[in-house]
Length: 188
Image (tube, rainbow, N blue to C red; front, side, top):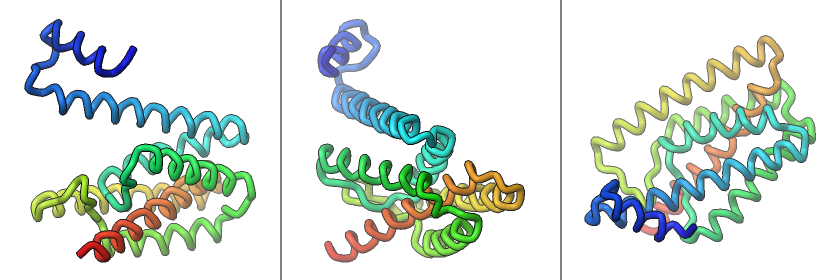
């Protein structure tokens, strides 16, 4: 069933106001894109035998990235291609064994410092006013602190599923935030 047809049914059943049509349509499309990305991550996690780390990465990344902001693609196709590349990179990094405790700790510390300095980073699709910037910064730093504490604890008890996933999450989030930061600077 097409999204537009589903939306029309919701409008006809008075579950959605006609005036909210565009907003609901956007929300439905974003939900489908999110679901597809989740399924891709879980699929590749299963294929490469890294299901637990994939789930942990997905949770940590989704929570942190939603407030940290950063680079966003201009088209859905580009977004999917970059997302698939990132997902494959992360899962193959788990498979390669590069995430020992020292590498994870160094990545966590370096990425966290950079994120601490520049978050949140808005983009052309979602500009932040001063009040939103403060709120997003507080939330981002709180989430970042929780992930740092959780990863340090995981490193201490040698629970690789958690510290590898959080290290990969912080690295990817940091790269996307820095890319968004420079993208904003170049457009000014």
